[in-house]
Figure (tube, rainbow, N blue to C red):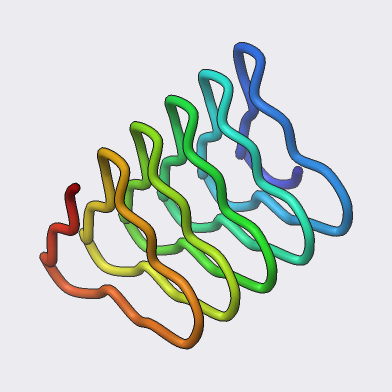
Length: 99
């Protein structure tokens, strides 16, 4: 965790995962593996970001959502509910993925 980024509540950042910029990880969210959360991105609730996934810009991952593999979530995109973004998927711009 670097810069002005923060981790709060019962959230975890483990392995070689990185949280930087002013990014925020909260609730019981988990960022692990080689995942990165940067910029003003937020990961909250029980969400998970893993593998080499990257959440950046002003993107949010929340609820019980999971971002894994080589997936990217960027811009002001929102991934929520029980949504799964994995593999080489990119969610960007103002996209909303909810399940």
